[in-house]
Image (cartoon, rainbow, N blue to C red; front, top):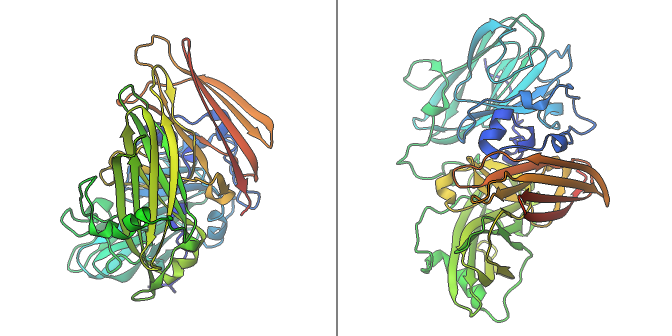
Length: 520
């Protein structure tokens, strides 16, 4: 049977838990350690469902990669009668952890065995699964859900299967007409009281046999064109142009941005932020990330097809040395379309662009232009900075991150804000809403020639008062020689400061960051 359509899918930017709330194995593989003392501040807001007292790091799958089905795990009150009664509260609640899988295929089993990847939770918990999947053959797709207890299936925001409630293992089914292209799927599930658990999602494509849904069977073909407004209207994200180009060569799409850089005086039609973030140091060259952030409210849109709004940004940044020579260039063309239903959320947020660059010691200037093709206007910003020669233990800038998204590393080659299949979007203004669950990201670079192990000292302040201090040894670096770190920030509004110091033998590196958390 088919249920009445509804739209309950959370925005993409909110679909993943911040690193400090991931499962232990996920943190180790993707972002490495989170300070246990500071993780304790990663708590749900007062109106949310209260989590249990046992450690949040007991959740997690050992294999969380981009493209997997990702589930946000929640504790729920005992006696919860159905998913529908708690979904609104879950969407306002910070997940207790994250589990990942390729297939929702857990046949009925004892409640003592639980759901794979979820530990120390046998009764009264929920998992909200999300994934985007590619349909190659258009037509009618039949879906079935076997579960104990309740489960629901949404495809492109429409409820297709309703198997909700507290019950023994039972099956429900529904169907959806799917076009060729990318689609979204959401499967909320909850386990109520003992004595069994089960969750099996099956799919029967047109002219095919029914079998368990496996996301590896529904990936975009290698030869398929990238998602566009025509075949992917459910994903309102700005998409990178696939055109490869000479880093210092001029391309047609760059012309309006280049004209803005060459204009005198430089145009300033709207505000945007430009920052140069310091990462891995080196004697011959140091790695930086050029970051651009454009508020959604200043981006022009026009009417598109099928209840969408078109937008088109071009970002161009030139890196000049101290005598004015262009020593680096980065640019991207971002055409996109946003469904009318997601426009308000986009306008309330912002668009971010980052690109890595390696520079020899010296003084540099970055000139960046953002051209809005729909509004036929542009703005220019300039940043100057010094890149000193480095030696010994080092520390990157501390970066306030507002969202974490799955990312294809090949599409962001050389971008230090992409790590472990995730892309961090920095908050360049230093102000972020509590609902975004922000965190601080940085990299430690030990001195490979030193015998001593590096130690970290962390100090956390709120409104000028120190609220936490911690010192700990750091783990071994990854193959690149770096130790990625993330620290979850409190969700309570206030002015915050974090200071990180790395000590290795007689060498010391220190960085600090000030920022503000504002209310919803």
